[in-house]
Length: 263
Image (cartoon, rainbow, N blue to C red; front, side):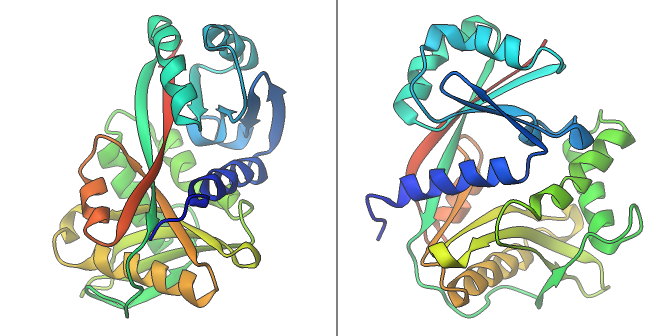
């Protein structure tokens, strides 16, 4: 059962993770800007986080000033009410509005389900490491118009994520041919009893064969063994995986609002 303070703990974890994996943090009204020039094409590493009071009508100007050097604008508002209040001004300024669901795991942690053995992997060398290769292939399918430098940054940014939490692991399951079939990130702060599971994905050739179940349950089991009673993930508020997670014991406890635009 989700507890009333689980949402705030998850939000605090996300904010601290964003700061830790950043190369630079700058204050802005209502929050802070994170920046990482090595991954300039990763919006995750170059965006504004709003975690305090701000005048919604001023946010477009705040973003234009703070992100003047960037070809994009991205703002994540971590309070649901404030995010809704900011939506009119930002959409009028040309921003797209998305919703993220913060979902906590309230079901039992069972033995690893699904198919295959869950292992911990490093990215490996660009572009020859097996995990790197699988991630890059999937990224090209997600972003068919992206050039190779963008793909390289989208995959390589996981090196920065290593700094985001005390214990960061990249998990994977292989298919019968030894190729990486499914994967996920696991970020843990055992001293605080909290863990985030991120980017659960399956290669196109391996879908609907139980590999994602295996990697998700493997992440949950590792988090539980590390003493992380609060286990959460973030899901797109409009996409089908939120239903898949719900069937596997995750409950929505809150929402964040993401606003993005290319100038």
